[in-house]
Length: 232
Image 1 (cartoon, rainbow, N blue to C red):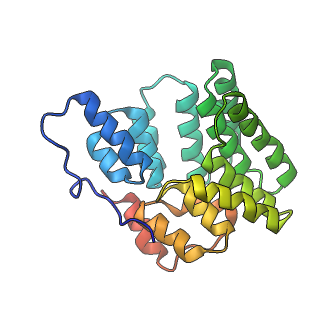
Image 2: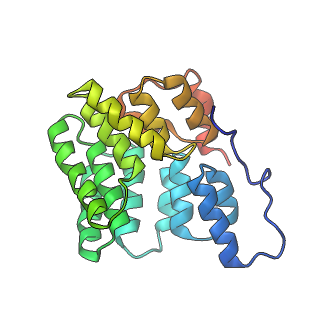
């Protein structure tokens, strides 16, 4: 069962925290699927943009990033906003983020960029597999476990070619994912557990755009989720 939705009101911060400690709390809130709490606590434009993206608000994310230099992580967030909004240039933006992340040696941004790029290559699963292979190689070189979100997208890609292999990868992604995260929702969808997937999405205020590339059905109450995604 998913952990219930968090809100800033449910999780008051202790008095006397420094600005750095408050930002740490906001980062943890975002990581654990509480984007509204992250928005309430954070003043960091990139973190706030990422929280808006969990909620599906690409316009708000772009507004947060308007004054930021075009680093790999900024380009990545803009590419995700474009993908959530259904812009046809999202793939090119993800590719630009991927290229810059390579140049800057930003492994986390590179892994996220290839994950996003592969989402847009659903019509050609072999191309998506080649794209994702770069992220797996980066993790191997860095001595890290494969990223759960990358694995979940890999599972969807593999499932188009071999359902059993896709489900095996999804099981790994599920094991490594955190509650209320895109990775967990995607993994559960591959494992044919949509009820659990959509419960996780609702608990994390996760917009349906995060799994739109899978062609999975939207939850039975899409209007309610859409309101949750954009309301303050």
